[in-house]
Amino acid sequence: MFILESAAQLEKAIIKAKKTRTQVKFISFGTYAVKGTKGNFYTVECKRGEHGEKIVSCDCKAGQSVKPLVCFHAASALALHVGLARQRQTA
Ligand SMILES: [Zn+2]
Image (spheres, rainbow, N blue to C red):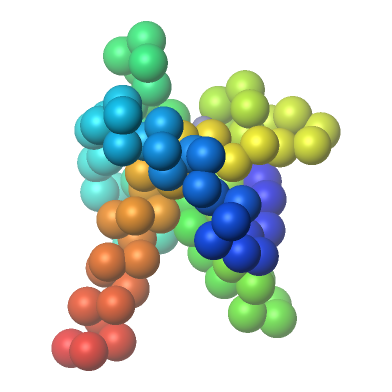
């Protein structure tokens, strides 16, 4: 789990996500299943914390480490999540 503070944090993960063009499945608003490089699916959750912070968690190895990295699963799910959140606001 990590707290998203700036877009710069995501830069590398976004580049990888674009290269990988992985599959993102919508489960519910804020919860997505993202296909990993081995064909398995990881669950990514995007939610808001108590103070409005953006909390993102992924159940892959990188997302579980002590100092979690922004993995490309999280970046892929976020790309979809941000789009959906925007639609909701304008709807
Ligand atoms: Zn991940």
